[in-house]
Structure formats: C-alpha cells, structure tokens
Length: 329
Image 1 (cartoon, rainbow, N blue to C red):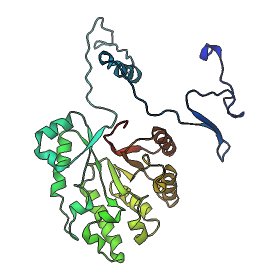
Image 2 (spheres, rainbow, N blue to C red; image 1 turned 90 degrees about the horizontal axis):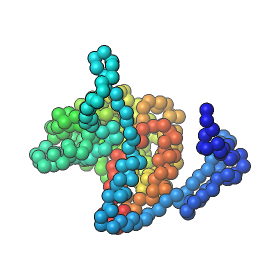
Image 3 (tube, rainbow, N blue to C red; image 1 turned 45 degrees about the vertical axis):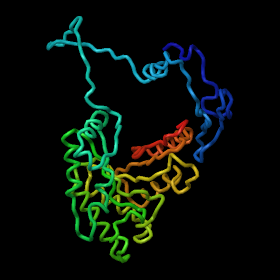
Image 4 (spheres, rainbow, N blue to C red; image 1 turned 30 degrees about the vertical axis):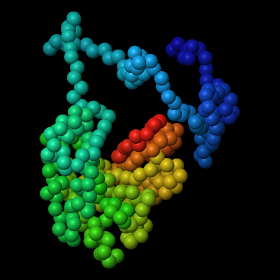
C-alpha cells in the first residue's frame, strides 16, 4: 500500500499521552478522559454555534450548492444486454421511488376529507403517526366501550398510499392523559384494565404499524409504576412483544435533546432505565423515542446526547420535532 495521509502519521493514536498531537481551532474545548474500563478518549465541546450567513441577492444558491456537493456522490452505472454484454451509448433514467430516510409528519382524521391536505402530505412523506386517534382516551371513553371506528379509517388510507405507521401510543404514564374512567379506578383494578388495553389495541392493529410507543413519557411520570410496581415497564414490554412480534416496542419521552436541565430525562437517565429493563429480564427488541420540541436547539448538546444514546445500538427515532418560529431558530 502507498503511505496514507501523504506519508505522515497520527501522533499519540492510543491517547496514552493526554492531548499530545491534538490541536483545536475556533472555540473548541478539548478534554482527555478515561472510562472505568481504561478506555481513553477525547471530548470536544463547543464545536459550533449559531451564526448568520449573508449572501448577496444573486448568490443565494451558494449554500444550497455546497449542501448538494457534500451530501451526494457520483455513481457509475453499466447497462448490459440479455447476455450480460455492455451496451455502448445507452441512455438510462433513474426515478427515486421511495426515500430511505424516514421523514414523517403527524396526521389527524381531517386528512380523510381534505384533498389538499392529502396532496400536500403524500407529496413529501412516506411515514406517519396519528395525532390522537389511537390514544386510549380516544378509543375507550368508557370501561369496555372500545370503539375503533374512527381510528380504523386512517390505517386504511395509509395502506392505500404505501405509508408506514407508528403506533402512538399504547399506555401513557402522565396521569393527566388517562381516560377519565381510568383515573377513578381502584388501584387493584388498574393492572387488568391496562393489560386489556394493550391486548385490545395491539391485536387490533397488529401488522398495520411497525413501531409501538408502548410506554409514553415513562421517565417523566410514573402513574403505572406507583400503582403496579417497579418492574411494570418490563412487564409491559414483554407483553407487547408477545402480542405483536413484528413491530418494535419503544420507550418514548420528551426533552432529552432539548433541555439539559431536565434531569428526569437526560441521556444518562434513559440509559439507566434501559439497563434496568434488561436486568429485570426483557431482552427483546427495543427502540428509543425522542420527542423534541425546541426553542433554541443546543446543537452541541443534541449531538452529544445522540452519541451517548447510540452506545446502546438500539434504533433511535425523533418521534416528534418542531422548532419555534423566532429569529436564530
């Protein structure tokens, strides 16, 4: 092989000598750290910040063209005949049929009666989640009075248009969003009601969704844990996987990427919850859902949080995303 890096070599590649051989530019802060297992690593913080980009009126496409160069690559194609022989000067066309990146948008039941809404949605999205139609307070407004007539029409629309659906949500830990009749249940009756709910909705829509937000906002709230025991999350996940083995069950919570000061739901707390679930015996598939409602995104914190969560090697989905419409957002 030819010498790499023009014949040069990386100094201190194993980081045995602190930050020797590593330099910074801009306002980057470097720290040399060592994990409990002896692994040495560098933490780079303050790598970027907000900035304003100015372009003259006739050069506004410059930034867009740079993105095009960075995000795309050249591809070589060879056209052959039925015998596998190359064809000279063949003309080919390529049409993208589906996006591999799961770019989604939430929809409500009103999409079914609004053609303009449908055209707008179908022009840009191949994934969706229903805003409220699958939630417990929408499908069972009284004990035993399960009604999926409203929510059933939406998976039908999705299937007809090759849209993949996330199931949101099965159970919600926030006590404010329980069906009114569930709030009044004696503690001894809650486990049966919760399990009936899981079996009902997950069997009804089995094969029609590819994810289930089984436990919503578990890190912030503990409605079920306080009433059913510390291992209730593990019990719910085990049950969910038994009911619908094709869909991935998710823990889903908010503010993990938004607010470092929200100590209930930091990446560390998320990892500890996953570790506890594994220790309690659930070793099936699991996903990390991150509801992200930003004012001013702290991009350094977002990147660091995602890196930390990625150490689990579990699928990570930004399940909700919005950014406030104010300057520098």
